Amino acid sequence: MRHHMIRPEFVESAPTQLSDGVIYISDRFRTALHKCCCGCGREVVTPLNPAGWSCKRDDGIVTLKPSIGNWSFPCKSHYFIIKNEVVWAKTMSARQISAVKARDARDQQVYINRCNQAKSVTELPAPSSPTDSAPSWLSILEKAIRRWLSA
Ligand SMILES: [Zn+2]
Image (cartoon, rainbow, N blue to C red):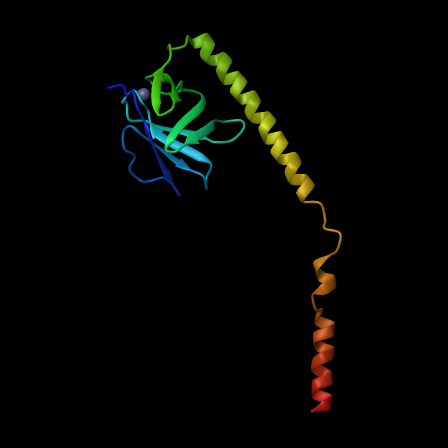
């Protein structure tokens, strides 16, 4: 049975059992999870990042962008989630699906590259090395000897 409404639930991590007609949104893992709205019961994972989906929320009402195309499922269902409403889209042809897949792969690669670039910037050595301020084993030894001598 196709669903026409979906209810968001904000969770820390994914529950073991998913309910039909509920989309679980985890800010911690930046992921949303729901059972395919066609009723086939398969889990649909939508990463919430610039290469995946954006999730607009307003007082318990969510809109996911872009549409959700479950091309890898036998049902091949395709729908939008707009303000908690499941808006069914036309099933795409095999050719359209492969075009979308190629575009998604490209977006994903661009995003990964951008993340890697950002990471390499933050990984640059800090101006002062932490060993400068930390007591070295030599200074600890020196203190111990002084204490021993003054005892
Ligand atoms: Zn399905």
